[in-house]
View 1 (tube, one colour):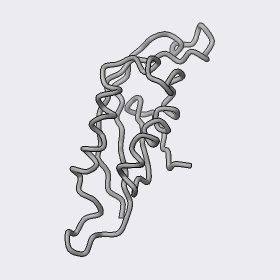
View 2 (cartoon, helix red, strand yellow; view 1 turned 180 degrees about the vertical axis):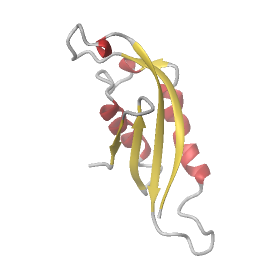
View 3 (tube, one colour; view 1 turned 45 degrees about the horizontal axis):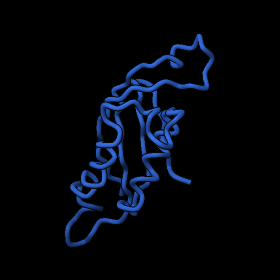
Length: 118
């Protein structure tokens, strides 16, 4: 069984490795949507994989570190592509969410990435 919570992050970024004329090489903002997926068996007594409150609790420090910030200023996100952001999130959530199975980062309504871990 796979469950998830969807979260929002408002953040700015620039992609420094792109050529000067590329629009994403300039500072710009995104309303990122992030899904945090946890997989596992249903607990026979509780009837769930994990308490959604546990996912939300794990998310809070990550949200505080990213929301309304310039992602380039955060250690490990100097080149903050959606792919790097997904890996960064995984590294910070995995210890608190052992069943973490997937991170989805949507940078626009139609563009994003899916990360399943290493």
